Length: 137
Image (cartoon, rainbow, N blue to C red):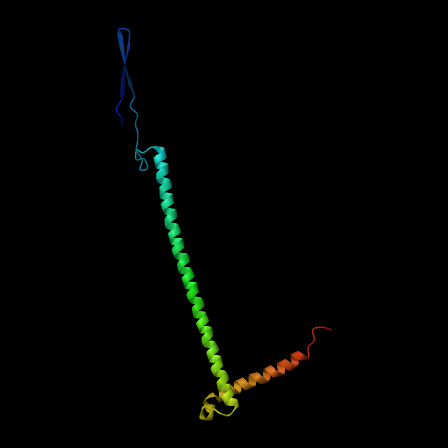
């Protein structure tokens, strides 16, 4: 609590003393005795710091997400290349089967090749059927 303020005033031969009532001030947890604009500046500075931290986190996330996406694309491309190699190997094996050059390996691959033969027959039948269909009258 503040001390009461006392003022003395002389009027002619008389002296008058007045005592103003003490003003009670309470400090809040926010009130640190700084002027208002200093407080506004502090709040603005904290806002800037929070924005910087948020931007840094966003930058890190974006960089990481980009790197992760790039790696996933590279993995997909490698898997596609692997599938192409399987396909090429299968084509060569198929040609060896058709040419009768598989020898004893024929029995190991015969069930799969029989399925391929069946699919090829179905494809041929469907192609013939589709040729009979006209889109224009």
